[in-house]
Structures are given as C-alpha cells and as structure tokens.
Amino acid sequence: MSRVFADTSALMALLVPSDAAHGRAKRAFTRLRAQGADLVTTSYVLVETYALLGSRFGLEAIRAFREDFGPLLKVVWVGSELHEKGLDLLVTAGRKRLSLVDAVSFLTIRDQEVEAVFACDRHFADGRFPLVG
Image (tube, rainbow, N blue to C red; front, side, top):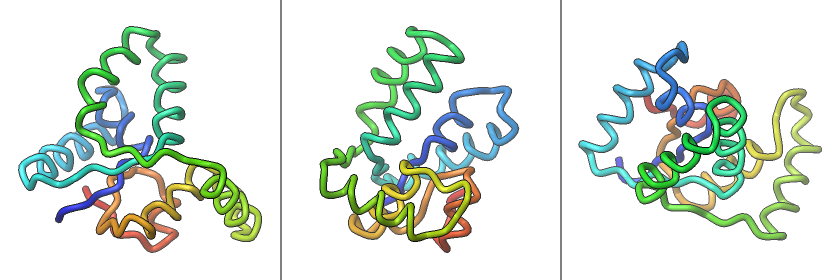
C-alpha cells in the first residue's frame, strides 16, 4: 500500500488514548509506518484536527502534533478550485451529515490516486473507500 489518506477521525483516535477507536487506530498506524505508506491529507483536515486538539487539550497538543506528525503527512493545500468542487459535491450528495472537509477529502482521494483511507468516520465507508484498520 503506497498512498493512504489520513482523516481527522483516525488522527484523533490515534492521539487520544481514551478514544474508543484508539487501539484499532494505533495498530493500523503501526502497520502503515512499517509498510512505508505515504500518508496524504488536506489542509482542511489539518485545520479540523488543530481545532479539535486545541479545544480539547490546548496549544501544547497542537504544537506536539505539528512537530511529531506534521513531517509524516503529505499535505494537499486546498485552493479555491478544490474548495468550490467540494461545495458542489456537498450540496449535490444529499447526505445529511457530510461535511465540507469530508467532501474535499473525497475529491482529494480520487485526484491523488489514494489506495485506502485511514479513518474512523463512516462517511468514507459510505463513499465506498477501502478503510485501513
């Protein structure tokens, strides 16, 4: 497996030992690292992750994530074109709980030839993306 998309749900599960999916996320992450998989994500996923870490654990958690995990991630920076395509998908998908972050992630997964998704979010399974873990 060479390219895997990393979602906020899995990153948070990996980082938070009290998360119900922590053990599964930790095992999956260990396998991905051993396989040398490239972890791809978007700037929107990073913003979402930073917001959750900051609100739950403070600035030190953001700093630690940035220093420890930042170098492991290949970031697709969301520009206006991808943002607008994500909004188009969001409004046409007809899914109640699909977020703009997830819609942009779906497009990125397709555009970046990602093979699987490191996520604990059911939206990715609903989108028929193969999940890691």
